[in-house]
Image (cartoon, rainbow, N blue to C red):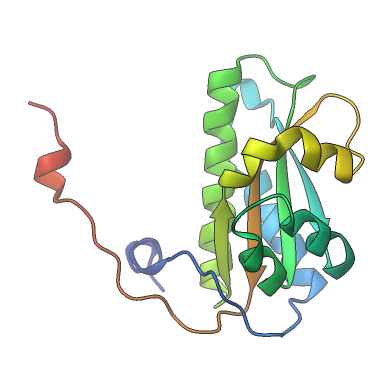
Length: 164
């Protein structure tokens, strides 16, 4: 699939089949994220992958828990504050990291949903998962085999997005 088709056809998937995502694919997803650009090449992201037992507990911290419960794996993305040199730039790098992972996931015919609302419960989530040290939860990705393909997305026209 060419890159524009990949970008234009990627969608958030919120319901998943009960199929296992192989560990090798999860490792490749993380590898794709690892290669994102970051300021000073500081690579401020850190990952945690959850399976059944922990993901169900995580689901209790968001109104979108059904997405977490439906997914086969959950990838949490943290900012390593000790590796950070500029919070704003590091958040942009983490966004690039996540986009790399989302595009790789889509290229493998899997689906994912980037969950942000759960960050309202960041401290409780980190306590539940016993995350210690300089790590700050920045995103949660639900990953699995799509139950169905979401409808075609809509975007504003390019012309309407260009400042004059």
